[in-house]
Image (cartoon, rainbow, N blue to C red; front, top):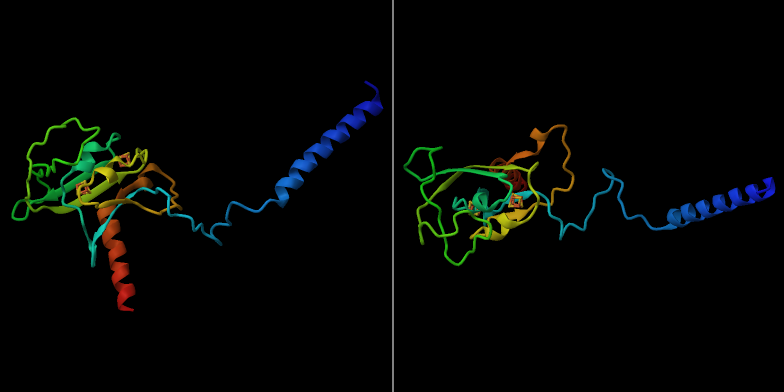
Length: 185
Ligand code: SF4
Ligand code: SF4
């Protein structure tokens, strides 16, 4: 190949490259300049799971401490603590509340232990290790009272794994306090 041919080939390759760059440069942006801008299309976004509060009481979770979500989670991300009023805090919650028409697709204990345990329970702690979560949604689907949802927390960042271990009950109470202050203002 002569020097002229080599030069022409090089130029052609440059033109092709510039054409691709120019085309991409003129396309509308599909990303946003965070933190100056934030995304708005969060309807279908699955952030980490979050507790849903009681209607009209943003600081109290809807959760009935049945522990179904803890049991179905294939990655073991959820740890729940609760107690029955009048009993010691931190003790084992005696039985699962099992509602027969809610299937347990990945449970080791498929058979109901107790068909209609209606014992009142108080939630003391709900921790989520988001490092292990695959966002499969089984916990959200399995909750018999729809006490779990996916958050819209898109801007998670942390320096260590510890930063992705959440206390969802604390988060709910914290959010609820702000909601109350906002309402009062
Ligand atoms: S979304 Fe799936 S992996 Fe994540 S906590 Fe729920 S059940 Fe576990
Ligand atoms: S499945 Fe729902 S009600 Fe049962 S412990 Fe989990 S969040 Fe609470």
